[in-house]
Each structure stands twice: as C-alpha cells, then as structure tokens.
Amino acid sequence: MKNSSFLYDFFKKGNISNENLKLLLETEDFNEILFKLAKIKRNEHHKNYVNLRGLIEFTNNCENNCYYCGIRKSSKIFRYRLSKKEILKCCEKADKQGIKTFVLQGGQDPNYKDEELCQIIREIKENFKDCTITLSIGEKSKKSYESFFKAGARRFLLRQETASSSHYEMLHPKNMSLKNRKNCLFTLKEIGFKVGAGFLVNSPHQTTNNIIKDLNFLKELNPFMIGIGPFIPQKQTPFKNHKAGSFKLTVKLISILRLMFPFAMIPSTTSLNTLKEENSLKISLDAGANVLMPNMTPKKYQIHYNLYDNKPIRTNKTIKSLKKKLYTMGYKFKVYENILQKN
Ligand code: 5AD
Image (cartoon, rainbow, N blue to C red; front, side, top):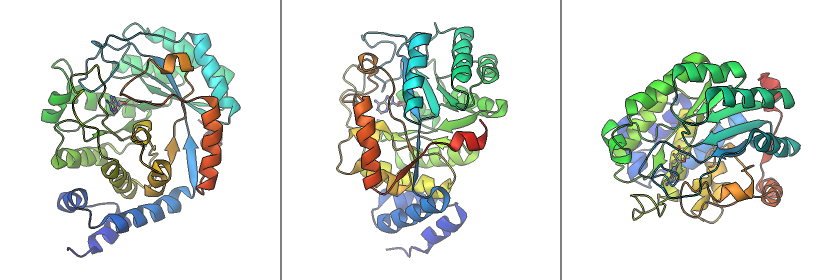
C-alpha cells in the first residue's frame, strides 16, 4: 500500500494529483484517513454548523430531455407550476422555521417568462428583507440571467452533471452541449452570482476518469456551492434499468471536495439520503457536507417532482424531527448567515 503522506499534503494545500485522485477513488485503502481529515477540515471552517436552504420546486415543466431525469420533456407526468402566491407561501413556511435562503428550483420551463420570474423575485425580497434567493432553473441567456440578478437573485445552482463532453453526450440528447452549460456557469459568475455546480455520481457509463475531469473542472470554476448525488433510476426514463449510484463513493467524493474546497457549501443531497443507508445523514455531515435543503414545496406538488424513483416527500413534521435528529448528532443550525453576509 502506498504511503499516505500525499493525503496530508492534500489536507494542507487543497491540491492533489490526478494519479492520487484515481487511487483514492478506486481503492478503499485510504478511506479512514480521508474521512478523518475531511472532518477536521469541516470543523476548522464550519464548526458543527449545518446551513439550511428551503427548497421550492416551483415548476416541473421542462423543455429538456436528459436521459436520467424523471421530469424530462418526454415523461408522461402531471405538469404543474406554482403561482406567485403559492411560492410566497412556501417562503413564509421556510422563514417561520428560521430558514433564510430560498432555492427556487424547476425544470427548464420555457413558458416562465423572465418578467414573471423577476416579479416573483422582487416580491420575495420585499416580503423577506433578510433573505437570499437562489435560482436553479437551467440554461438561459445572459440577458435573462442579468435580469434575475437585477431583480435580486444572488445565487444560482446549475450542475454540469459531467465535465467530459463524450460522457455528456451519453446522458443528453444532441441539442444539449457541455460547452453551453459551462458557458452558462462562467456567465453567471461574471454577472456576480455565487454559483453552484456539481455532478451525478455513478451515472450510466461514468468512468473514474470522468469523475477526475469533474473535479478538475470544479477547480477551474471554483464555485461557491457544490452539489453531488448518486444517480438513481427513474422508471419513465431511458436509464430505468441502470443501477443506482454508490453511497460509499458519493461520501468519499464529499470528503475529497471538502479538502479541495474548504469554504464551499456542500449539501448532503436528497438523492444521497434516498439510498436508505443507515445513518446516511450523519455519515455525510461527518464526511464534510454542511448544507441541507429541506423541501418547502406543498406535498400535492412534491409527488410530481419525481426526478428519480422513491424521492421522499417531506412535510413540516419531518423538518422538526430533522432538527432534533441533527442536535443528537452533534450538529446545529446556522440561520443568520445571510444577515452577516448582507445579502
Ligand atoms: N438521479 C439522481 N439525481 C438526478 N437529477 C436528475 N435526475 C436524477 C436522477 N435520476 C439531479 C440532477 C439535477 C438535479 C436537480 O437533480 O443532477 O441537476
């Protein structure tokens, strides 16, 4: 077995060679030290805090046909769009629980006009003065992104899904390109958004080298947030017969990301916690995750936002018990981060 000194170097500098990344990803020899170091790094920069974001799945309409996703254009599902009033209600629900960051997530919905969304953003900001608005609505023009920023949105989540163009083509139809996705991410950054990127773990046809490319791309982008989660098959998609991603590999990647990006916001994602591994939440937080995104979408809509099979339905009650659960794991909520950051 190779000497583990390279890991201490990685811990100190945040950099690691592709060769050593491959070793970490393809063997289990260094897991224990890796997790230990990632936990130390997490504590150094984030103590035992967990940042909460209220997820609002405001539309499941989508013009894209990504092969892995359950709300892809071809899926025969009930399509919905929340009204402005309903969105504001979700924000209120989050706000009441001390959650100050709202994530408006949706499919790439071509019928949502920019002005309509800008109006919603402005009203949220008027009603919840100390809130931060994060958008997660896919690829749009620079002009659209600028208008959302002007209206008051400050963060944007757009996973690259895979940073290898040949792999990207295996996951998406021809009208989509990695080039455009990357352009969107750099444009968002240029406008002033804090951006979030990330990738699917064990998506069909993914190789270790693909993952290494993702990590290198993230180094280049240097995002504020990084969301990764295991691929989970959805029965209406072309990938319905592919197997779900590995819990172990996802957690390992969270630790690698924590060492590469000490300051980043890294969520313990819903898909990771859908795999039903015992203690998945504690394991992922210990591995370096520092964000949770409780779902604020009304239950009657959540059931139709089925990106993958068995996606859990969250209610207010489960958020309360989640709070308790976190305390027993030795973690606490950080709610006033936004006020301090003056967003
Ligand atoms: N399994 C896991 N994650 C998925 N997503 C979409 N479909 C799936 C799936 N089948 C993720 C994508 C997207 C995010 C909102 O949901 O990575 O960026």
